[in-house]
Amino acid sequence: MKNDHVDRVLLQWQDQRPDLDCSPMGVIGRLSRMSRIVDKEMNRVFQNNGLSSVEFDILATLRRFNEPMTPTELYQTLMLSSGAMSTRIEQLVKRELIERIASPEDRRSCRVVLTREGRALIDQALEAHVINEKAILDPLTDEQREHFASLLRVWLMANES
Image (cartoon, rainbow, N blue to C red; front, side, top):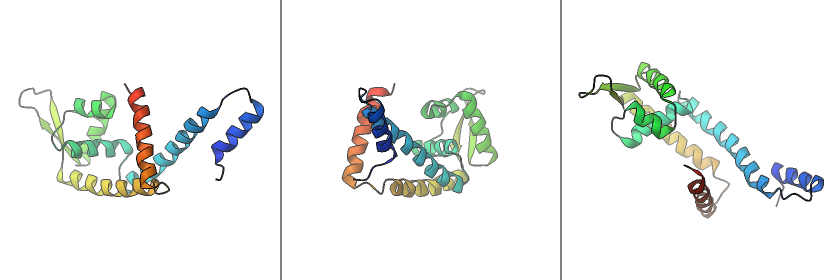
């Protein structure tokens, strides 16, 4: 098996600090490097569709839920601040990808929903996104992907709040 960048770092630490178990660096370092590569590839697809990653997430969330959502529901689902969500919603409304629907019960409240144009764009972007994710994971077999997903699930369940 060939050595990657992280293997070389670990060997250097082994030489310099043989008393220290640096094996966690093997996992964390690879996850960090993988994250940068994945983000770059995903952002390329989003940009090709005229979207930022946050805009993609907003449109995809509205598409997944398939019903009008309040800005609060959106920002809680996406873990954004309310201010950041308001700004993004305004930008997407101006681009006519989503529209606001006034609440009949509370004039201060609204829900947002995809427009026909927004739905068409997110469907197109989602198809490109899934193809891209498959390409990113192409070096792994189906069995390796399932095992990797399982390991990540265990870690996330123990660490997410």
